[in-house]
Length: 147
Image (tube, rainbow, N blue to C red; front, top):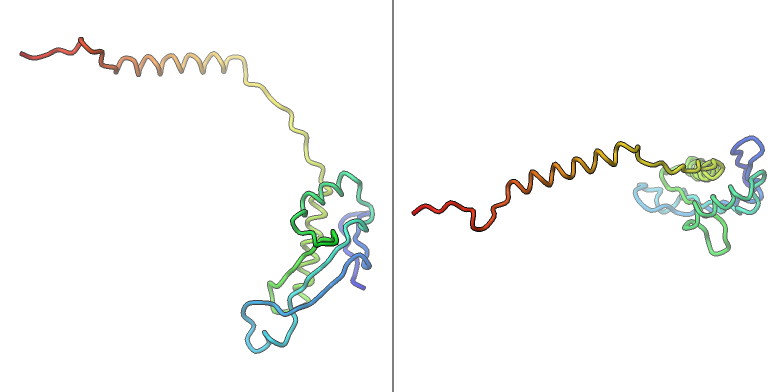
């Protein structure tokens, strides 16, 4: 059984909701690459997280939807280093980060409207720009022809 992941006061992932698998990592590793299992796969049962409200749980599911395995658990991998323990810490840090993000309630956007004078200013600028362009136009028949 893995150690629990403490996220905030009252929010934690119990150790029995975490499953850890180690396998051989890809990439460089010298002579140890074919002998040492340093890649970590962390499976977390999201329904077992304690102290998390339903809104936060839904945000978490949206946030990690592409990282869910076939049984609906969060799958996190880490193979940054050649050390299994550091990869385990990295994977646990990722899970902690996603849960902490889901706990933050997004601010409701308050739609704003442009100031009343801005509309008038924009229309004046459009008319000025249009007049400038019109003054550059060559009107057929008004061209001075030299004999």
